[in-house]
Length: 241
Image 1 (spheres, rainbow, N blue to C red):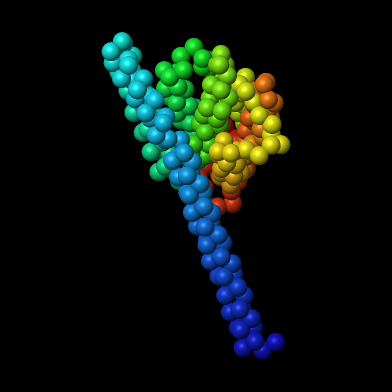
Image 2: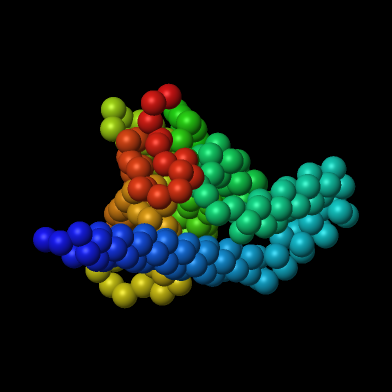
């Protein structure tokens, strides 16, 4: 092959590689856009007017009956809303400890509304991993809203974390009304699919749901320790601690 031919070939190879790089960057930006839209949609679904109205109504009642608890509830609501706004701004995964604190805040607010009808159990063996922002709290909200509070006598929501040699595990269980996983689901199902897709895209995680009518629901989240995104290093490696 002549020097000119070699030069042309090298130029074509360079252009092809450049095209691959540009296409990869485009796909990454598009993925970020889709993930951001899903997170915003999920965030908006969390701050529903009826939830705020009910919480504010409970705080108003506490102002008359127990001012100290009313102050504590106001602080919890402020922390909850601030946590949601912080999640909206986060473009990376966040520490599980931060997400679990957001869950505790949410459950403390729901406890004001439902009183003895809502019991919570925590069994946290590890918080030393990362999850998508709002990657667990919506699952807990489903357990409360579509699970235990649908029972007249209420029930218990439990959150457990542990780890194996290969992965971090999160279990969210309730003894509420349950549902048939094979039947068409409405809003709660869409929220689960939202979380599932972000878990897979941002940390290689998976989400499995087991439920039985009249028995309750169990959600399992699995996050590999040694998963790499192959892109910008936003907490790409989860192991080695």
